[in-house]
Length: 441
Image (cartoon, rainbow, N blue to C red; front, side, top):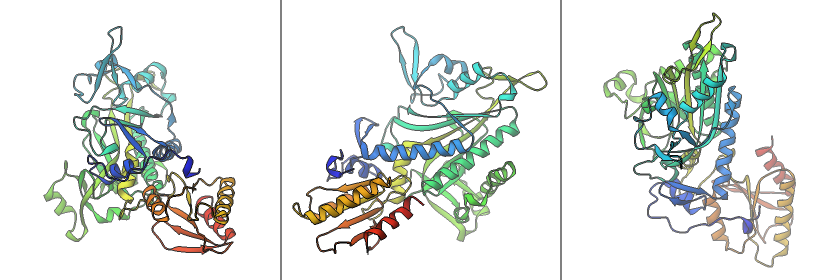
């Protein structure tokens, strides 16, 4: 795409209500615009990043054996009354009525609805195990929405739900999602630490939240530095290895301030290994057994012919929140650098030639069309802005690789740079090969 054609309303000044880097950057770079308190429109640049994150989340859910579906944003209040959660969920739930005076709600989560779908359509143990997921907008009426998309009211979320016949099989589904989450965050170039968490309004007997390290994080973290050395590649995707993986992570002390115990921390972690920092929650998984299936009569016929209440779990990832979390983890010295997997464009071509410099224009256009033919996502700066303004804007946008074309270069010479590194001079063939190696190999 050419920059002159991209809807990119860049703002020079930092909005006064934007207190953290991700909120500031997303407003300034034209990724989002607020439409109401805690509710945002996603503009083209931000939407490209959002959709790429969504696709990675989808691919890892598919790899884990989950099946995608789509549930509505509006749910019947009757289901929540059936589970016993309607009155207790709190003011975060947006309750509404239709013209027939029927009670509805804008879904903050989907345990009740997915349980109804399962109950009405699955009757035999032969259909288990089953994991269903969707990626859908949610609404929670935060009392004080803040930090841009990090704590807003409307947000995009992936939530999946597992159904199993026994507690042991349900734990295996939980472990599969644990593994899928670590793979997802690794592909986003984020180091996510799983931590035992409170189950909150979702309920259940087992829960982990996944937190990435960031100085601006809302949670204080107390953990063992050695936990950072664990790699997803250390574990295999089979039943025993997955159980070993969860047990290995659980063997390290790791807690947010809600569950922190100073005595236990000092007892389990040597002083030199203690890590106290801040982080951002980007995912949360729950095992809650029959909390919903029992009151809602979600049962299957077992191999012995008896009706058995299924065991369930739910697993959430904040897809839209991940955009802000990636920024908080990568923004440094007023320069943004997107991970290759989610960058809005893969390469920026910055033409520094003056308005009537046909040589620079031809070089830029030639490279632009060549990379487009190879399915490389290119953003060509064909504007008349000054060089200083162009570089400042691209530091803001954060495309990881730049090709710089200027009037003082030789005919077959191009400057190539990673956004936070030094420039190198390459021929056209060398340049194309390097970009291909970065993205296509």
